[in-house]
Image 1 (cartoon, rainbow, N blue to C red):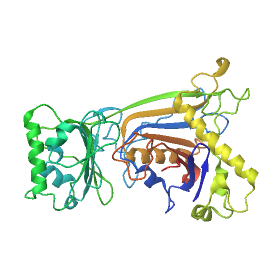
Image 2: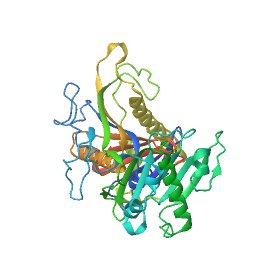
Image 3: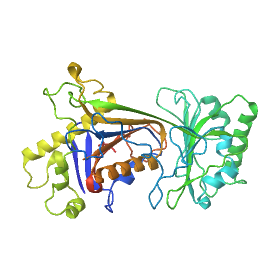
Image 4: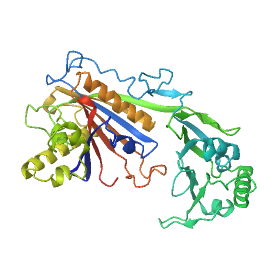
Length: 409
């Protein structure tokens, strides 16, 4: 497993999905929701087999790319992903009040340790600078940013923020064994929030994306809401387009005339530490493309770093919309791009990466790339996770991949 840094603060790691120290699961699980996912498949250049999509054929069938896969493989055909999905089991979107979020039966089923579950609740419609905003994290903590009026009546202590607003921030450990009926703090908090509900002004109410999973293996569990709570299934949109040649990198400039299509991910990064593939994957502490491994040629390091950065910038350019039209009216198609937007879970991201690995192993494509973007300042993200949450997997045959991530994560 190699690691390194390309330009622009991007850390690059090389591994394989089957490797015992593969970083892909931890990287994907840093946040429970991402806002968008892009899948890019190269076309033409003689690299695709007879079954690959050529420049004149239709788009690849990606209808199963994000679907949940069981331990034995295959697709859960009962879970449609595009458009409303009332029966979706990855998460539900519900309108809840603060009192309903701390309902005792609700916590017993989803949050407390004896439930055997992990629960996530992410606010969707609150304004952090002006509204009452609450999130529940997998550790069982409720994190609240409250307006002065609500804070004064909610029964919790909280520190004023220093972000130019009058908001108060508070945290409550809902999974703590003492947070049960009969405990003074819990009873005071529940009573205060119930009175806010009785006043009927909607204070603290909002839409939340709620998900629950089994703590032992991450399998999704149904969320059972308190009586009177509205909920609906996930909503995900899908768009696709052709990517045309004649431009380079994230700047969108023209290339050297004819161009050579999309830059391929530099597989030499897997072989930086001489020897067989297993020893290369097991290598620890390699400085990689920026600093260079011991004894490596500086020119080779610089060239590899440039190619890593160039591939990452090209993928970013596709996301930014470059390549919709070739310069000078050129129509040479070099790739296709698919984009899903909405609330997407780690399970969907992992499925997309596995889908790309299957395509690469089939010989239909020499590589495939998946990029995801998180929500800025997502309160449910893991400690130390970057604010933007951008990840790119460049997947190659044999289940190998290059992982591009913000160097701050």
